[in-house]
Amino acid sequence: MTDSVRFLGIAAALGTCALAEEAKVKLLTLDPGHFHAALVQAAAYPDVDPVVHVYAPAGADLDQHLKRIEGYNTRPEKPTAWQEKVYTGPDYLDRMLAEKKGNLVIISGNNSRKGDYILKSVQAGYNVLSDKPLAINPGDFEKVKQAFAEAEKRGVLLYDIMTERYEITTILQRELSRVAAVFGELEKGTPDKPAITKESVHHYFKTVSGKPLQRPPWFFDTTQQGEGIVDVTTHLVDLVQWEAFPEVTLGPSDVRMLSARRWVTKLTPAQFEKATGLKEFPASLKANVSAAGELDVYGNGEFTYTLRGVHAKVSVIWNFQAPEGAGDTHYSIMRGTKADLVIRQGREQNYKPTLYVEKKSTVTDGEFEQALTAALAGLKETYPGLSAKPLEATRWEVVIPDQFKIGHEAHFAQVAAKYLDFLKAGKLPEWEVPNILTKCHTIMEAYKLSH
Image (cartoon, rainbow, N blue to C red; front, top):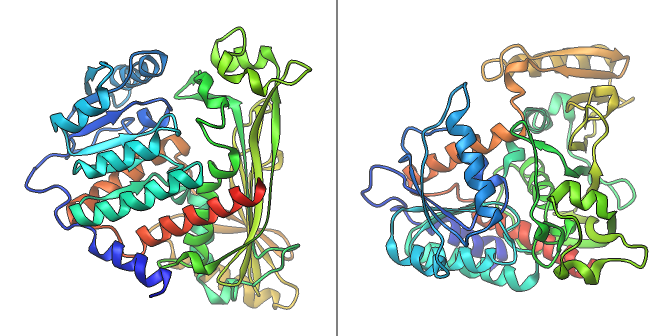
C-alpha cells in the first residue's frame, strides 16, 4: 500500500459525527501562549457558543490572552461578546479532558507541549483546531501521526490553521496557474532555479491588533517554540502543495529532500527587553547567549526539495524589527512554460503583497494579453473588479480591489469559519489529512538534514 493510499484511507474515514447531536460549537482554549489563540476569537460565529472555557497555568501568557479577548469585546467597531471561564489549577489539562465543557479545543502556544496536547485532546474525543507547527521535532511528529489515527477512530476532526491560503494574491496566483492559456504548465525546475520559490520574512517586534506585541521569553527558546525551519515553513510547504497540486492527495514518497540549512538571528539585551519586557535573558536562555552578550536564535532556515519531480525552495528569515512602514513580507514565484506568477512585497510595492504576471519571450504579446484579460474576467464572479495593468511589454500587475485585501489577522476568522463548515459536514476534504502528514514529513526531513 502506498503512502498516498494509506493516508487517503485515514482522511476518508475521519468521523462523520464530529459534533454529535450538539447544536452549538463550544470552544475550549488550552494553554494559550501565542497571540494566534486570541485571533481565532477576533470575530464572532453564529454557531459558536460565546462562553469559552480556558484551561491554562496562571501567568503572563494567560493574562495577555485574556487582555486580547477583552480588547475584541470592547472595541468600538463590531465588538465581540466572549465570556471567558478560566481554570488555572496545576491539573488544568486533566481537568479539561475530564470536564467535557466543550467540543472543540483551540491550541496555540508553547510548541514543546503541543504534541501531547493534541494527542490527549483527540484521545478524549475532542475536535482540535491547532496553530502551526503541529510538530517541532521528529518525536512530536510521531505523536501527530498517532493523533490523526485516533481522530479516525473517534470520529473527530484534527486540523491546522493555514491562514496563508486566504491571502488574495496567493489565491489568484493559484487560480492563474490553472489557466493553461496564461501559465502553460508548471515547470519542473532545477535545484539552482526551482519551479516554485517561497520566502517569508518575519519580525520579533511588531504590532498586532493595533498594539505592540509582547512575546513570551520561551518564544526565543527553539526547544519550546521550534526552529524557524520547522515553524513558518509550515505555511510555505503547505502553499507549495496547495498551489502545485490542488486537491491532489500526496504522500511522503512524493518528497525528496535535496538540501537544508539553518542559521541564527542575534538579539541584543535591549532588543530582547523591547520584545518581551524583560530586562535580562532568563536562565533558560543563558546557554544560547554568545560571548558578545547576544542571544543566538535559530530562527532562520531554508531547504530545497522535489515534490513529484517539481523543484521547490522555501526560506524563512527572522529579523528583529521591520523598516518603518513595513511588516512581515512574502515573496513567491511559480514558473510556468508561458509565464511566471510572482508575488512581491517590498518597498516598490509599499510593503503590500502584489501579484505580477511575467510573460515568457516565446509567447506572442497580443494573444497573451487577451488570454490574461479573459482569465481575470472568468474570476470576476467570485472576485469582481479584477484587472491587469501593463507595466512593461512582458509584465502585468494584477489589480485587486481593496475589499479583498483584509490582512493576515482577519484570515484567522476565515480559517475558523471554514473549519466550522467541516464540522457541520462531519469530515474534511479527502486530501487534507494525507497532505498535512506529507507537509509535516517534508519539514521533518529538512530539520534532520539541517542538523
